[in-house]
Image (cartoon, rainbow, N blue to C red; front, side, top):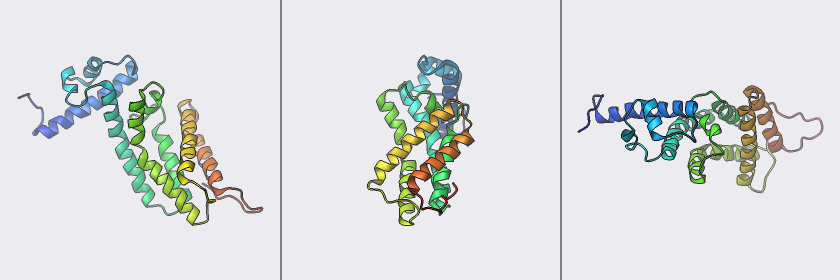
Length: 210
């Protein structure tokens, strides 16, 4: 039986996973994902290469596991915060702010999604995208709530509209990655999305502030 460095096997596995998680992110930052090997990941994590196979069979699988570990608490926090906000415009502003701030280059964790967006196999990108589905569901709920309240214009297909909004968010994310001030991008993105949701304003009726 292998030696464990914790009171229980579960705690040992959690300790090794944290080292592997942090070592993986450090290795990607220093070496780039394309040239990365399990041996270099193990070196950064301070563990034997064979130990990695207890957690993931390939570096792509390890990437998915690491991103999942980052995304799940991020999404859970957004869900919890949105549940405390009644106003749909304020809820949307929160989602935009949280999403873009989490993906700023240099922020440990989720910013790795930006760095690898165009080099991953489709199945890996799909797996990562699936982790954000709860956020898309929140946005759909925001749109539906705003329509019911008369704050947003009626639309024929909420799902299609949300997909368009996601496209806007991707463009905003690229601006943040390019170095644009995140506060500016958040404000512009929020107002753009809300402007589209509100539709044409009646003469003399100012738009609501995001």
